[in-house]
Length: 275
Image (cartoon, rainbow, N blue to C red; front, side, top):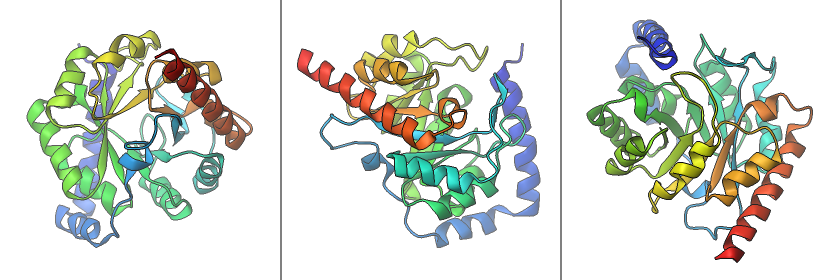
């Protein structure tokens, strides 16, 4: 029986085939090679820095399969600029069209508006999409372990690093974390939303946090409603939290990010003091 993730990827592949038809791989690869060097998202997300500051990956997100329409976002560049002013470390931009109403045009607009790393948030299953992400100025791509076999996961990650980019490698289970570690993932996310059912269980991060590789940035994904959820994740060892819905549905996303960062820093300080 097909899952939500399976259905999304079918659509992603259909849309990808049309883009490949319009812009052949050689053209996309040349455009990627012509871009300036990617920004260092690994460092931006805190690797090598004292573990006192929670990093926020702030998402430009219009719609989701679980909630439907979230926000109009007529000007993604201005929203991203607010995120940056609020203290976000990375901007995530949904580019999947069918379920999230995103686009590569949104990625272009955000890249032109901010000076911090940008994540292309999509369902990456082919090398073309990695080159495409770099061609449009992305510094990171999303690699979902559940959507890839080991050979494809390793190949896509190696290509990403070869282009000077980083990848947020998303996991949901112990086994997926082990697979991410085995291919050398440097930024490992735990998504507490089940991509088969779309249910959210924040305790998943708590169950899996200790298994995350020590040499990777740990990212908590999904399930943030307010500062208390940020504090929960930070208290369990998250170095960064990806937040979308709680920002795009809030009237003042800049201030909201500042609230989140304060809550995260307080939780990290409490955790460090306890040890």
